[in-house]
Structures are given as structure tokens and as C-alpha cells.
Amino acid sequence: MEKPYGRYGVGLLIVLVGAIALLNNFGITAVSLGWFLNLVWPLLFVAAGINWITRGKDGDRIQLARLVTGAVLVAVGVLFFGANAGLFDLDQTSFWKGFWPVIIILIGINVMFKNEHNIGGNTAIMGAVDKTKDSWELSSGDYTAVMGGIDLDIRKAHFTDREITLNLTAILGGITVTVPENVAITCQGTAILGGVDLLGKGSGGIVGNATLQTGDLQNAARVLHLRCNCIMGGIEVKR
Image 1: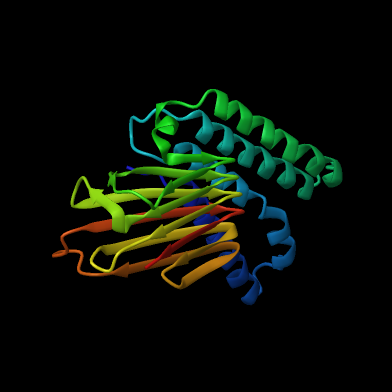
Image 2: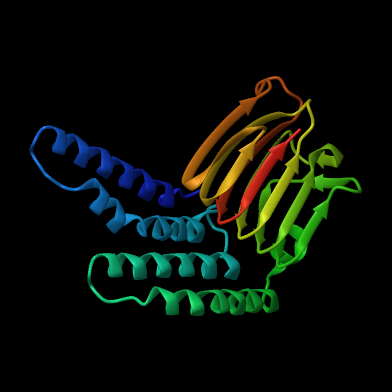
């Protein structure tokens, strides 16, 4: 079962913003929402990192790609939060100069030490996964694009079970999923500094969420559940 700790963190931040606005309106507090949002926005990266590290099925071994990505997001969030809170000074120009080369180095380490799951063709790291030309077997699992692209044509897929769940994650990359008309679909999408398009229903910006359900989930011969997470990238689900 997926552990949505990161989603809890984002939800908690939203609750805090609403609580401060409510208390301000009744004159109980006088906290500037602009100041508060400027202080806590880096915690969104911390929440995303925790979610990335802990997501997946119970008992699964945390993959190196997941651990490294989550750790980097948490570190970025902590650094910017500390700087915004005045705990230390952060030279943002120097930070971003070093950030991207470190990301590339970590991706290279990932490529060298990728595990069997990655070898199975579900991960695109500075590359591509293309399942659009030939028939292929579709089973529940994770598809991850890091500075790469993934293209899945479900019309050519053979379902190994009636219900399939795909966890789609794009980090500085893109994922496109083409679905047939006769498949019932549920979609949940979250985008951080990116965009998610679910059959024309889009969400993007700093943080965006979108949900979609189409088809008869009870009687359809095939059901596809899509869980989309996007960080500085894009995910598109289309007919």
C-alpha cells in the first residue's frame, strides 16, 4: 500500500494557511500570509522527498533512484527553509551552480547501479522507454522518467489482470499514456513545478492536483488506475 506521507505534509501546510487566515479574520492573530508562505514553501520539497522515499508497496526494497531523488528533494527543502527562517545565509546563485551538476552525477551513479526493476524497462534516466510499436504485457508497477521520456500505448497492451495500477513519476522528464475507449480509468495527479494533463483536465503551477474517473469501474472488462506524480516535468494521459 502506498504511504502518502508527502501528501499529508502538503495537506498540513494547506490547513495551516487556512487556520492562520481564519484567526487573522477574527483578530486573534496578525500573521502575514505572505511572510508565512515565503517561509514554508520549501517544505513542499521536503514533503515530496519523503513521499518519494516511502512510496511503493509494503515490503518493497527502496530503490537507489527513489532514495537518492527523495534525499535530494529533502535537502533542497531544508536548505531553503533554513535560509528563509534566518538560520543561515544561502548564496542561491552558488547553490544552483552546484545543484544541477550534482543531479547529473547522481543520475550517472543510478545508471551504473540500477537494479533489476530498472533493467525491466520501466525507467528512463536521460533516455527513453517506448512501448508504442509492438504488443506488450501490462502489469501493475512503477514507471519513472528522470530527465528522459516514457511513451506507453495501452491499446497495444495485454492486461495480466483485470485491474492494473501504474505509478507514474516524471522528474525533469515526460510521460505520455495513450488509453483505449473500452478501458475504465481512474487518475490521480499531483504536479510540483510541472504539469499533469488527464484526458484534457490539466493541473500545474507550483503545486497542482487533478483527479479523473471515466467508464464503468464495476462492469468494465479492464480497469486502469493511474497515480501520477510530476516534479518539474510533465505527464499526459490521452485517448
